[in-house]
Image (cartoon, rainbow, N blue to C red; front, side, top):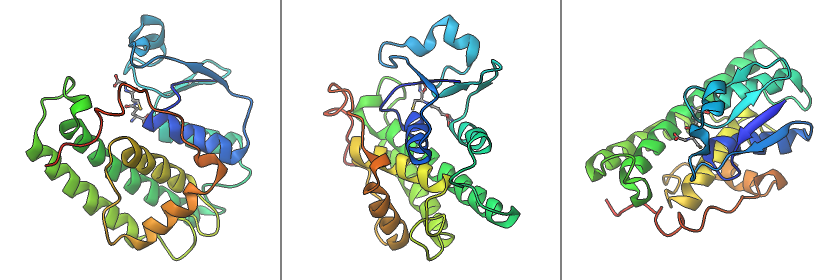
Amino acid sequence: MKLYQFPWGIYPRRVHIYLREKGIHDIEMVDLNVIAGEHRNPAYLGKNPIGTMPTLETDAGDCIRQSSSILLHLEQRYPSPDMIGANDAERAQTMDQLFLVNEAYHYANLCTGYGSPALAQRREPSDEVARAMRFEYGQALHNLEAVAGEGSYLGGDAPNLADVVFFASQQFMQELYKLALPSGLTRLGGIYQRFSERPSAALAPFPEMLVPLAPLRGF
Ligand SMILES: N[C@@H](CCC(=O)N[C@@H](CS)C(=O)NCC(=O)O)C(=O)O
């Protein structure tokens, strides 16, 4: 199998962290330079017409083009250690959490998309939209906090898929854009802190030109 990706991206990092958690080393990494636009070349668009990364190409030549679907596919191929749940009820719980995490970081991405100077060429900057999206991101994380349970992680004693996606997304938002976890989320704050101490959490460096430009404008 091949993973088309770049080392520091918010979505590829979900897969990198997952692979480290599972100890999977037999997937070939194909690095495309997103800044240089290599993900827009015809060969890659043939595999993923949306032109986003990551894409997982299976040995049968099928392409899986959404990071969450990639994690679900890999979880079936590499079931141990279990990161989705041991029975139907646990699996449904993990999926509930995963959908809530994706919802929260969709808003966070819109917040940074409208509020970070680094992304001003992609979307017309708007403090009003950025502020509204930051509010929705906070609301969605409050919903996640409400179903976070009492364990060390969303998955209980050990991280599940939703923990991986939550951690990768929040780490990216915090480290690159300086979008902190909203205050009052004590369960999520604790989970973030515990996950950040895991070896899988090590951060790949961001491109130097992005670092000074990325932090959100004060809106
Ligand atoms: N929903 C997709 C989003 C993937 C995505 O937007 N990836 C970003 C990089 S982190 C990308 O490829 N952006 C390139 C572009 O939009 O031009 C997923 O979960 O995989």
